Length: 183
Image 1 (tube, one colour):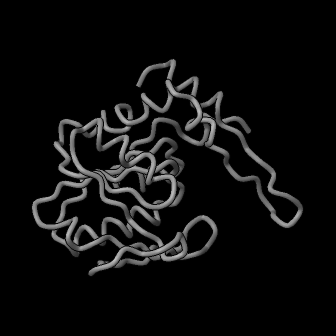
Image 2 (image 1 turned 120 degrees about the vertical axis):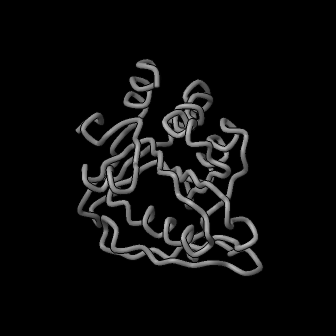
């Protein structure tokens, strides 16, 4: 990844105070989507560490993954498979393979589902997302891959904020870490 992209990702990032009803700031990554140069560079930058592993498909969880997943898939010349969450709108029709994540940074478990007909034996999966903090959703997607006979090659995120042991275990690569972002 270029130093210019890294610098621009940091510049366009913001922490937002959602109001008195919450106890923490939330990340605002929408500046990344607004900048056409960053948007064009994200797909190639996310796939670069995994290109030599020859992924056959990119999987990404709702919601921001539905933007990053197709960018990464296009950069690789492969297809994209969304991992759906029940609370994010209508679930797709047809058979689904489900997994529940361990507790995430908010202490909640997230259900994820992938259409059976879009993931199967022989698939080599690259998972992409905007942010990996606890890797809870990564674990759930890897579980779905195992159930479908697909091989997870690793995860690429714009921000990898998980502990080093988790990064190594799950093969998580980040363009940035949480330490790169402003306080």
